[in-house]
Amino acid sequence: MSTVPPPEQPDERPGEESSIPDEQWEAFLRDAAESGGAGAPKEPSARARMVTRRLREEEAEEQRGGTHRRWRPRAGRRTRQQGPQPWTPAGWHTGPAWREINGKGRRRRRFGSAVGVLLAVALAVVAVRPALVLDRLPGRTGADASPSPLPAETALPSGAPGEVDQTGLPTRDHPFRGSPALAWADGADAIELPTAKAVGGMSKADVALALRRTKEFLVGTNLDPAVLRGGQPTRAVALLDPKAAAIVVRLRRSLRDPSRDNDPTDLVSRFDPDEVRLVGAVVKVRGHMTFAAGRPGEVRVHADYTFVYPLVKADGGSDVVARTIIRRDLTMSLADPRKWVATKGKLMVENYDAYFFNSECGVHDGYFHPVFPNEAPTGAPPSGPASDPYDRSRPLSNEPDATSEEGESCGTVSRT
Image 1 (cartoon, rainbow, N blue to C red):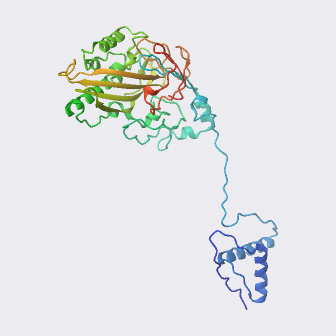
Image 2 (image 1 turned 60 degrees about the vertical axis):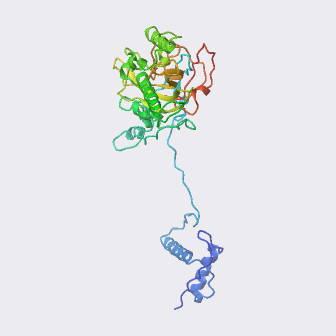
Image 3 (image 1 turned 135 degrees about the horizontal axis):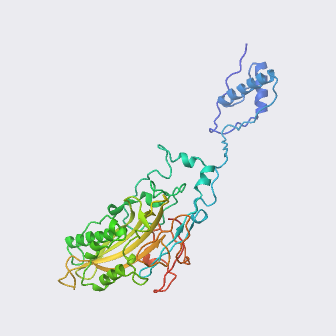
């Protein structure tokens, strides 16, 4: 009994289709079976096996009474089936469409704030997307998963942080949920000092002292728990040179009798203890510090840091969390008292800028006043341009300003 000789393997690239149509190949197989297999054309052995198997399947189908042939994609081609996409509320990752946030940016010697109002859509969203609840369970990843900590900042970044998972509102247990600050370092540990070296006629030890005292001032004015609760920044003020009397007198007067023109929040972060309190003991911080020679016998230290404060109502009746964000740009100097009118080891404030986000506009009582989700702001309405409080890509001195030196701007922020 004669058999069909194995077809020769052609020189074809993988995935290319045979030049012989299926109908001719099937006819060849039938003729070859009758004539002993002479004159077999060249065809990949894999294809021969495939067609033979298909013929057998069709014969078996016909014996069972079936006549329908199901279409299959040809070898070497890929098909992609796109399933239904999960429903997502419009603007879920685009700030203002999901929540209306009003904000205020303040430049040096201007006293402004930013207000933020979140739209409570969590229940409706969870009803449609139950995975948002399941993702909160132990062992699952999601908005509450701790991201990899960012490396220390040594210069301004090239752009704002990207979008983060915003599938839930911040809570007491997760006060930084939905915020880029979740990956930032905590408190004073985030203020890392550069390696000191002698500059401008000041020794390495002098520079190290200037860096250390600048950090102490930042901690004393922005991270001291007692000060954040509305206390006096006594230790921080003690670091300032009494011979630079103007700034010291002005700061003390603003703490004693705050007003629009003399507001301690210009340099100090404080919250009304009768209104709000911090959630836990963590304040997220991001920024960097540099130094350079000033006048001969002087070193100047520049600090640019953003502080993120999570807060709840002081009465304890609510678990809703609001975040107030403060970015400060500060230049301090340490001078040699043998060359300048200065006190040994004391700092002078050269200049300072600040932007405040999520604090009532037009309120100048010496405290920041965050606006909580679902609450309407009671301060002045916003009127200035929008801003991202987490965008550290531009120096504050280069930020656009819509007001005069004696005025103030109050705009919108894209997120808190």
